[in-house]
Length: 242
Image (cartoon, rainbow, N blue to C red; front, side):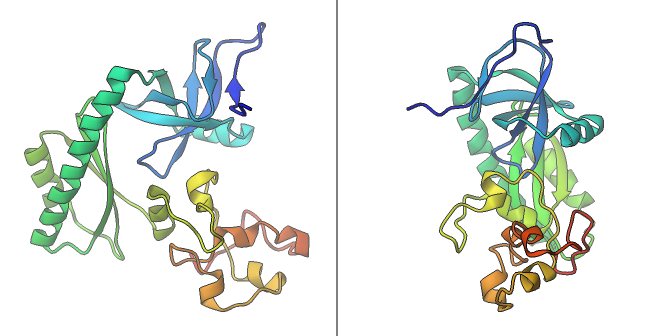
């Protein structure tokens, strides 16, 4: 039985609609603006344009209305077309370039003795822009690194610093529950987690029991907090643990 979810326009509806999509190489989920009547299904691979950067994205569903409006105001991605067989060949070539760029960047980081940990690299479909994702404990002056990378790769370079929670979203990882990490499969936004979430559920405060792969408190500690009467917990909760 086919359980694929299709997103089809009603006959009397405007062709402009918004879906939720994410890049397989990025931790971010975007609102995907579709302005034609193309039938899209959850899991479809599409090309989308974000600013001057065209990347492949995977359709993941419908965004929440309020989230859609916030993200649309701050910038969304515009649907271009479904990924074709020719695009698939191009994506293989891009993957090889990304892998080579990661190796080269790590070499330059070691040579410059920069206190950063390179996490991943994303190359636009046009091949004109690289985005390098990294973690660091402090603010880092990477202007020299950007200049070196730009000359060697002959492309525009961006360096994005991310947190340890976001780092795990780049990789297919299994949690202690035996399932794929929540941040990898369905969480569109990582919210802060407080130790109070574990206390009100009478869970063990042993760090090995409540700490996720990222080294921070597990996101799933939030799921049943309200059911245990933790009225103080909510979207505005302060998180001292990350």
